[in-house]
Length: 281
Image (cartoon, rainbow, N blue to C red; front, side, top):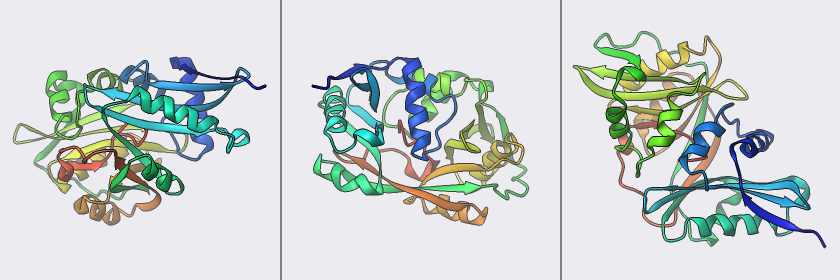
């Protein structure tokens, strides 16, 4: 009889998670495993069948009452045999008692509803080389390192429902990631990160007080990629963000549903022009 075991994944194990995510054409960031693992070192589970890695899932705990599911993958040759659902149950047990979020691909959304998740909005991935033109002259874009980290972390909390300082400090500091802030009249008005992915680059988060601030940040983030295409996961409830993507000539390439087990967290949705990552929220 086959032996199936679910264990906590280490950072090295998580490189496999990203390989599998790329096989699913999710286009993860090349170094995502480093900041991801720091978010919750006990929140990444690997399933092994007769010692062969075959399933993965992330179940990251944020603060005392929020959690996020992602990277839920069963390798094709073992699907339909019950191993994936065992991994899912272990992940949900890790998040017991919390409001849990996830970004569900279209063909799995009915299954997530059966587990108590309800759709809050959709994320639409827009991709291409943005034609940003010339940004507004009164917006200054700087390296995020020029802002004290506590100020940056406080700003992030406007858009994310829990503290995630360990993750954030690596997200802006991993080699290859470009993290920028936008200032207007001396006030912090935007924040964005671009990172190399298996194909092109991913932008997230992109927070901005207005569409011209988002445009200024995206102009600089895209320039850092030297003409390579970028992709952003845009919440469709932010109509200003959707209009901006369309105006910049970016094309929708992928869609998933942001779902929660309870009410959607109270965050500044109008300021979210792109999610940080659909894997960790």
